[in-house]
Image (cartoon, rainbow, N blue to C red; front, side, top):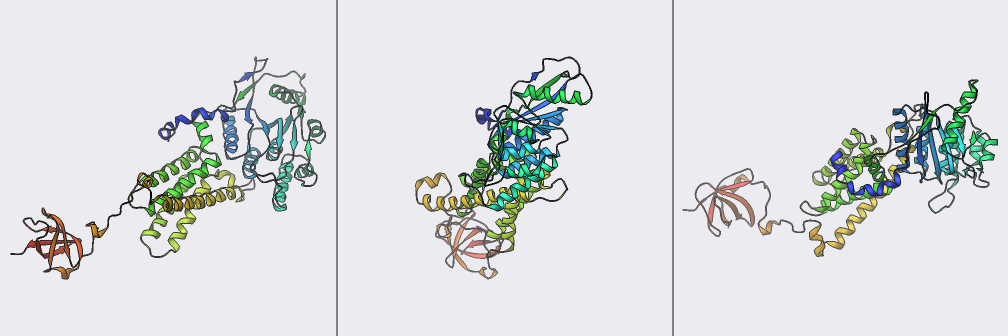
Length: 460
């Protein structure tokens, strides 16, 4: 895995956008036992990469024995399925998670904020406006709004907040957004803070006050999430757009390879696509061994349907289903397939299944157009083998030879030194002289057959 990722080192300069890290900042007071705040900066659209960023951050915070996790938010929202996965991960996190709304927590950002144990907001920031819209900004039908309202309401109930206010953030008629002051009044914000240090100080002062201390701020340290270059590379490769391209490479490459003779660039493209698709998912413990095995089994079943079984039946359908399931489930953290009650939740898989199906359709369409448009051009010679090995040109495979051919005469098609080819009854056969040699044009007699080959001798 590391060798494969090292080959892609040229992508490292593009990863800076995913770093989301700064230097650790100790508090002004460093003596005594420190409270560790682990900061995760999320300032991008909520998508699969953001989901993995937060998930990785929560894991690193537990490994660092952090006392609190600060999710530094500035986002206008994004994909609902990714936001739902982040929400579930936060609700299940054993370390208290603090949302710091650093300007915007709109739409999916509001859902993520409400899932946190406490919310602090920056002056001039806002939270809310969680109406579900499409990529063009148009409001989606009510069934989508109903699903979002249910998630907002249940999340607010799980964190002890007013569910009606959370539901109002999805209202399509009078969508609700809260300023910091309004959020404090509504019980959706524990404090208004100018920066992360103010958040840490307010959390600790509130804790010491609750214990009856004098209110002095205890020592604390803020650790910022750091990603290695390999983790940054994985973040890039997990982008849904790139994942779709890899899927198209797999499906399209396999189709073109099947439709053309020999082994060429299409198969190499499919293999590269599979590596780029599964490698980051496997590195992030998303793709499990059973999912990769299921993908391979699906390919084998489809191959058997194409090359072995006539027509298209159970083997082909089963293979296609296996491939789709393997590719879709590989995108999803299996731990998120079950809700807090332990019940199976299909929601996280719906979007990956859609991506796989659409990508497969585009890949197949592209493969058909590629074969159709390029086959008659010279460019195709650089993509796949054009020449087929036809029997009329002397190319034969392993043939079934009848026993009754014994005693027949055949004409030498190519020099037999001692093996070569002969023509008998208009067909070309692999043949071997039992002794001696024969040149092209001579007539020989078949003395025996075996393993698809004729054994001949010269006619006296």
